[in-house]
Length: 378
Image (cartoon, rainbow, N blue to C red; front, top):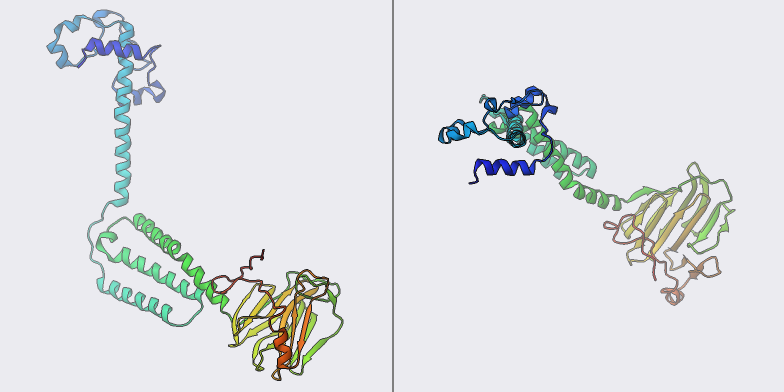
């Protein structure tokens, strides 16, 4: 241990300059924290009246120190060092006591009270049965998850009001704990909810498409994205006795009506004024607000529609039950308005069966890639 004079000399060397008291905190707070003098007080000028800066125990062991006053600069340094040391000791201690009081207010247990355990048990069982019903009974995904969310809120309420240790906590603590548990439920299961909703929406068998805006120009037909617009001035195009293609203007803009059958004459998809419906002859399909794409059981695209304000972009393959067929497909950058393949016999169909196939514009399967466009081929 260093001697008192060594300590005073070191403090004097470190704390150079005029002494700065903690008077900015006020004389009362300064005295409360440090128990020493402040700037409003005057230090005695007489050496005999100069107070000693040592403890009474030290002065009892070293009586000579009583008659050895410290130089003014050393005394001021000692005062300043004492003030800072007391501040570093008292302030954290006071803050710790304050934080302890705050934490104690959040976690102080109330006296044990008799709770209606039978009622809480019945509520818990009812809540579990209700959650099971939401999981078994067929219903839309959104309604199911809303029901499960309400069941979780009920479970949290029963937990915080039925468990004695948790029920004895202050109400504000239980409210915060319940809010945290609800947020945990939402954050942990939000991805699963969105994935199930996406799969349900992609598996819909009915829907409605419409153009993003309403045009007022000439109606036109475009075969594929590279085909030029063909003015449409007819009411309906009769492809087969049971198959037609119709473009007209309605309240929501351009409207399309058509039917697509497979080789055996089974209906795959039908569109009636932009309202579409698929059958079990459809392998998969994908769609957005203004477009629809359908695959048959062979996995080939048999209908692809995109609606614009005045134009209908379409590619498709129509059949009848007699073996006749028509295919409209993109020209892929050619000068033509589009490719047109037509056959009446099986031999003619085999000749063009693998030519000018319609390329998908969506990614598949749709349950994993709903509304996701296909990447352009290099």
